[in-house]
Image 1 (cartoon, rainbow over the protein chains, first blue to last red):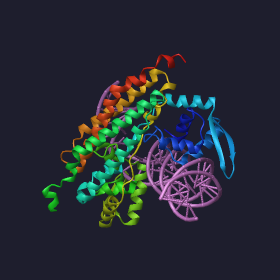
Image 2: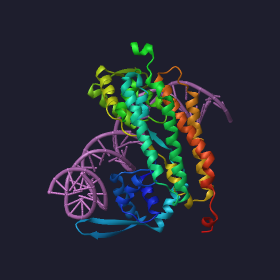
Image 3: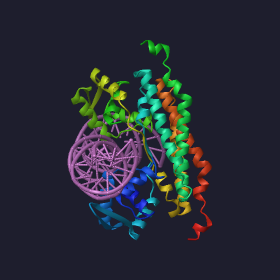
Image 4: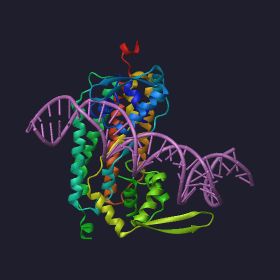
Length: 177
Length: 177
DNA sequence: TCGATCTATATCGGTCCTATATAGGTTCGA
DNA sequence: TCGAACCTATATAGGACCGATATAGATCGA
């Protein structure tokens, strides 16, 4: 899903500045499976404006950059719906941790344990974040997605806790090398 | 994990051409959580060669481009180990499907069902792929990673099958709008 | 009061992916 | 047996995206 489409989607929920859009990824329930950086959001909003899919109004502020508040236009809304009717790109899950585990046999056991610990605590944090922000008052989709995230994170934690020994225990033969 | 590091890692398992490296992502157990395209693999291998982390030998072939077989050098091997001792970048899981589900209320129910069906069958295929390629003969890390993938995919399928009704059933009030 | 963090926009450099070009070989069904 | 589809094999151009950085004052807590 390209950044322009993501911005359009968020703007269907209400007006926002580029800054606020970015904050939604960090604070709110869009977590972890949908994201974009400032470096792509600002150009995306500029281009959406040129294309007529959003409109801007500048709110001047004293001693601070203008707040540029974006609103989706009717054309933007139909464009957005249209993009959801096209086949979706596939998920892309890239995990440096998983990559590193493939080479556990090249590393000291303590490093492997450290990686597993760090990864577990990252996932725990993401899970805690999802649980804090309950989505009870939000659209049905948000609750569904929140549950999806929980299911994935819980599965990862379960797997790591019950299988980490397999990767942390070096076979005698290998340890002798 | 950048593409250069990924290439180095794969070359610790044995010599390979750029083409073969790419095939490993598709066929073998590196699946789904580690990937790179031709467009980044070829330049990465060129640069690794310049840096002395890999060496090349060209095997001329009749009526076909030369096979350029890459081998990791001792410097490449230590560079690779060193990169695994540094803190790992976080996972990045981007899901257009999850994004679309956030806006299920803007779409016809049939489209939502279609998306869920398509997504489930994608995940089923990935799971089947993992199960076909058993990693019994491979390093411990490969088995661990394979199990990790299975755990994630099974959790996703379970969640979708038991919760899809929540997103497919439109409330009477909303349907009336 | 001083540093850290927050609001707020924007660009630059680099990384990576998608699509394409090239070019012949193999495989398999009609 | 002929052609379509797919496989081996490398490479580049264009575009999308991210991370770091620049700017600049406000606010807040120790």
